[in-house]
Image 1 (cartoon, rainbow, N blue to C red):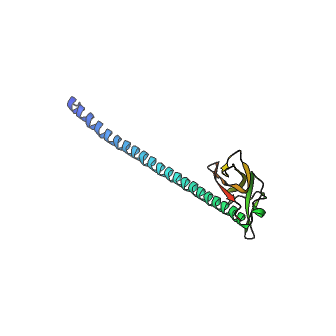
Image 2: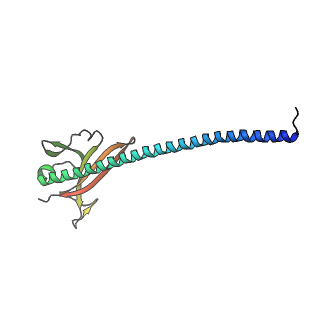
Image 3: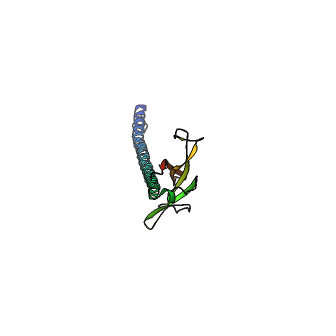
Length: 174
């Protein structure tokens, strides 16, 4: 049977709408799945980045405590006797802290990494003073009763070496 042109046009339009609606539903499903997948990957990346930031902050905090402990050990050595513990130290040389028999000591022998990660060093430098007895970086005379102490901590962080350091002065008070 031959369809009239109006019937043929109506049939093809309704058929087109039926197929396009079914295709549109599939496109919605694909786009929805892609958006959900991207959202889940973004959440996972934020979690991974947050974990890395927390780890790095923990390392920096531990390094700060190790530096503070190093400064306290050097001050304790000064208090225990300048002539025996501080005066004989070679200038501009790295020292490590050694805890043995309940006593801290500065040693020129490198120590193993602390917690398998941190390398702590103490460097002793001369203190120069001008005619007014002020500390100067150059051109003064060496003050044998003062030392500049720099405690530094280094550790690996994301494949590179991170460092933190503090410098302070100690004087022969006793």
